[in-house]
Every structure is written in C-alpha cells, then in structure tokens.
Length: 232
Ligand code: ADP
Image (cartoon, rainbow, N blue to C red; front, top):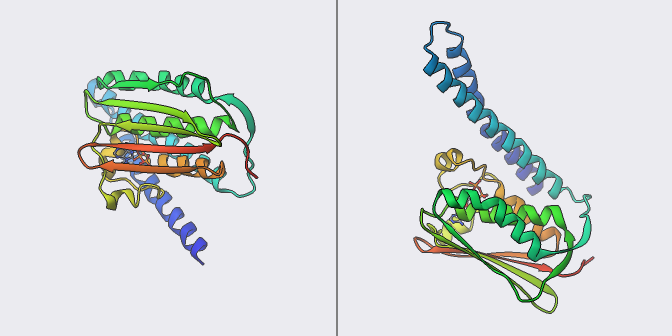
C-alpha cells in the first residue's frame, strides 16, 4: 500500500511539474502567432519557449534515470576504474559554471590513486549532481572543497561548500523526489528536485551511504561512502 501511495504521488508530482512549462509554451506560442509582433518581442518569446522546452527535456531525462535506478531488476555495470580521475573529469566539466560565479573548486587529491569496482556512469552522475548543487547553492566568491580518501573497504568522497546551508527540517526532505526549498528559484536555475534522489539511489545500489552535514548560512558537506569492491 505504501508503495502504491508513493507511486501515485510520483505520478501526480510529474503531471504537476510538466504542467508549468507546458502552460508557458502554449501561452507564448499563441502570442507568437500575431504577425504584427515586433522582432525583439518575437525573439524574447521564442527564448522563453526554448527555456521551457529544455526544462521539459531535463525533467524527462532525470525521471528516466530515477525510474531506471529504482527498478530492482536493473543491474549495475561493474568495472574497475580510478575514482580520482573520474572526479577530476567531473570537476573540469563543472568548472565553467563555478567560474561564472567566481567560486573556487579545490580538489585535494590523495597521494596514491584510488580505484573502485563500480558502475562508472552512475557514480559519475552522483558527483555531477552533488557538485552542481554545491555551485548552484553557493553565493559568488564561495569555495568548494572536494576530498577523496580510502579506508580499508571503502572510498569516501566529501564535497563541502560555503553556501547557504540547510536547516534540519530541510535536510529531512532533500532526498525526496521533486523536493526543493525554493521551487521557483530552483526552476530558474535549472533544478528539477530529482538530483539528490538520483544520487542517493545510485549510492544505495552500490551498497554505499550518503550523509549530509549542514549549517544554515555556513555551508554544506555531502559525504559519500562506496565499497571498493562489489558487495552482493
Ligand atoms: P534541485 O534540482 O532543486 O537542485 P536536488 O534534488 O538536487 O534538486 O536538491 C533538492 C534541494 O536540496 C534543492 O532544491 C536545495 O534546496 C537543497 N540543496 C541541495 N544541495 C544543496 C547545497 N549544497 N546547499 C544548500 N542546499 C542544497
């Protein structure tokens, strides 16, 4: 019954999330039909339509990722790879966004390389989601520190930001699908409220753990622990 309830809520959330961009697209497409519209306005409305259709595309991509992860029968594709190299790659793809906000990303690399046996693509998505959030929810001039270390059986990745932080109440909801503290702001900056749900599912599928420590106004640290080797 609980599962059915969750499913129903997911479906009603989805239709709600799709409704806003669709309404905007329909509205502005209608305005564009007016042949006397000045060119500048035509451009502006076309941009709004583009913005909302990109949003729909991100939403459906994220939803697909999440449902694929949560389907029990889906198996991870295990390979052995360097998690240090993987993090470096993800950081370099995120750096542009950070530079735009004058945010510095410091990656404290371990002296020795660390390899893990895991699903490379799915773990990459975890780092992308958490690092892009750190950039999104940190003000200009902030700092993001990424650390990776190995324990006897696990690798621990921590991503710390000097951003807006979260209260205990907020933290208790952030892994829920579609949960966002500030819906309209999150939408504007491209959020779907699915990023952390996706990250957590991927970590849990690896039999790992994801923890968050945060102080409102001070910053947030996400810590992910992933077993070094496949655990059946
Ligand atoms: P979104 O697409 O809105 O970023 P997520 O599932 O990735 O959705 O995150 C859920 C919510 O958690 C965000 O809307 C934001 O309010 C909060 N959040 C996530 N990461 C951080 C962070 N590093 N600092 C502050 N708040 C965060």
